[in-house]
Length: 410
Image (cartoon, rainbow, N blue to C red; front, side, top):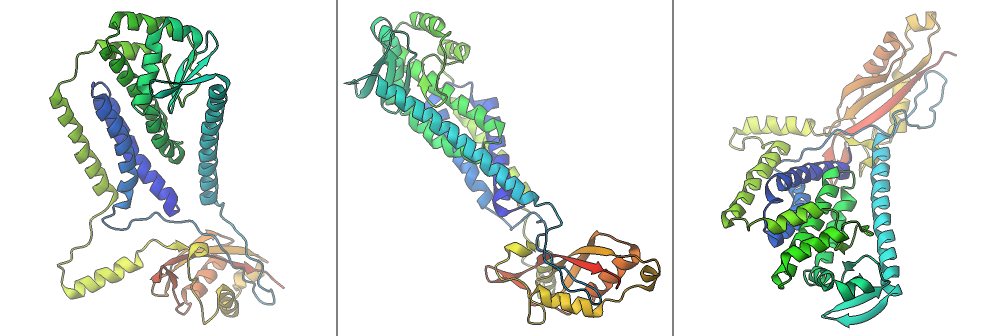
């Protein structure tokens, strides 16, 4: 797995835990401004936590480039891929999902801009008031309050509600949450949390409307009458929000006790345990020098190999590249007599690691022809002289290499 996909997976785990904690503990409290801040700050904190590492741990990577070797008079063949490029496929799928998510956002924003430009615009109470036709649904976006002419005249509480969205800068929250949606479009909890954030916006706007002196009962009846309206834009804050029952229950709910804020701290040990689980502890630094040297050698040998195609400086063999190794293998291969007698031909594909010390190890047969041909291939590759190891960021690292050997009778 590439470092980027590995990072996305780890950050997704932190986000899932954080959002699950919010849904179980935080969502029923009346600390609306605090919940807004925690949803945004906590989401971005989950993006930073995977970068805090106690020890570098990376997933194994798939093999990529191949060199073809002939036997006898057969020349080296052109490089090709044997293993399906699942990393590239996953990355492409991830990017397609992000592009679709961004496209949906831009389409919705473009539709809202068209609506805003089509109405009668005027400045009102520090906002830009856009008046539409008689029965148009109301919503707010940025400094714009969009409302139907009938609602503006007969239901001033609707304008007050949308104005509270504008004064509370709820659009900014949705824009700040957009990068989370783009990075983690595949995580259903992200979409659920986006809706929870919008619901918190409605709670806060409802609370401020009632604080303005509007009768709570009449306001709730207005919500019920408007509940049949259609929510046009998922990006905007609207009076006719779908979670009507939750909004009315929250208006009737007594204020949460101040000590409930301390319950939010329970999230800290949860995230800390996940961090330690994802980051194994380092080796003991107080070991004897000889032990330290052995541990360092083993750690170096056990590093996760880098894919051959992704290494900064590729490993070299006898002063040349993989083709030089192909020539060497071709010169040392012996066609097994048993395979000759049975007229067995084919391609044996092996995978091995060129260690940070230049030694070939971890030889595996990915494609077998027959046991005797497999054994001869492994024998020759095992006897290879040391390579000059590959380097990543200036440091020698193990490199995964896939190598086909073609056995073909004259």
